[in-house]
Image (tube, rainbow, N blue to C red; front, side):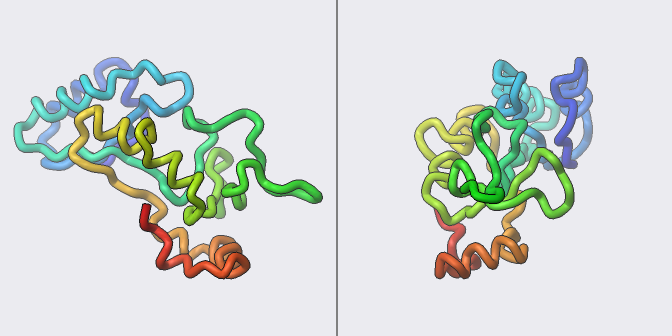
Length: 163
């Protein structure tokens, strides 16, 4: 079962905990702007307690930056006429039209550090007790804009996922 929305709604976690699913992929919720105080540790415990042996994975988009996340800064911008992207790993708007998601140059060290460092998203997820992470946009290398950016930097985008 995949539940990425509304986990902060009253009763949502309880209902999901009582479900019979052996594996759940859920939004960690604490890394969405405005939900920084969401108790993901309590959510994960409830989901585990609801069905012993259940696997609980956290959702994480690694091929796109999302403007609704707590890591996003108001001064970030995409490249435009005469302006470079800030930060430089931002590449382009989401190809599917999601106004809150932006392709990234995922091979750049500063993007990877945002996800994996002592206070990075992955460590915060694991500290909350999740069993692992469901990685979204691992196929970003197939996107034409990503491929073009990688080629211009002489990067093989299929070999640059390692953190």
